[in-house]
Length: 273
Image 1 (spheres, rainbow, N blue to C red):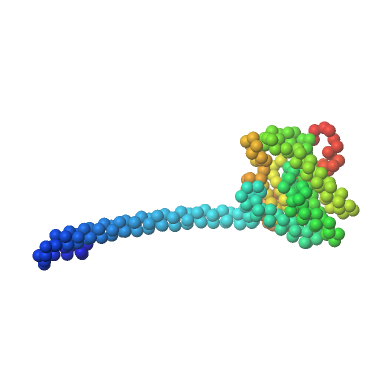
Image 2 (cartoon, rainbow, N blue to C red):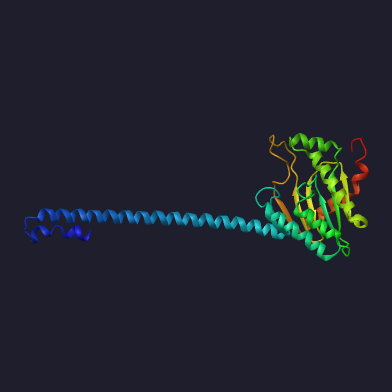
């Protein structure tokens, strides 16, 4: 802007033949610098506004996140993840650590309440290896209690219709065969394993130790064909033993266990559950 203003006196200060070129050059340069300054100021303002907006959005996200953390903490919830979706690895690691810790105590119970839990009760899984090692320990009195959905119940038929073509009944029978073979493998220590079946709508997936509970409510809805099982994709909670969440869902397990039947005795029946 200064150069642009100074270009006018140049008309009086010099009478060189090239004066028209220099005057025009100074004017053009001054205009270019003025435009550059305006653009720079505008861009700085836009960047500043964008930065403030980003900061505001980040603060709002943090506020909402802190509300979630505060709510979870007040209920004794330590973590939230998905069993089969994002967070699967973290879930599996924490379940494995919880089971190992229970075995390290040397007593107590590890409880599963599920439809079939094929991710756990089959050969080759990390959890199956941990269970075999822990239950094989002669000095360890820790036992395993498993509740499976009755393979002859109407709810297996309903489940298979809802999550076609997922083989619910086949998963249950495979899990039972695995648990039975594990019990046989343990020989005289086989009584550390008990597995029953229940014959009413599956409402929840539970893995429980004396210290922690992993909890996922089951939705009942029609999945798209080939989408896979219903369970495993809604939030799974991890809660402490000294919470109302643990107390109530432990009571749910015990109530279901009291109404259940020994799987191997019941499996020979042809009638519906």
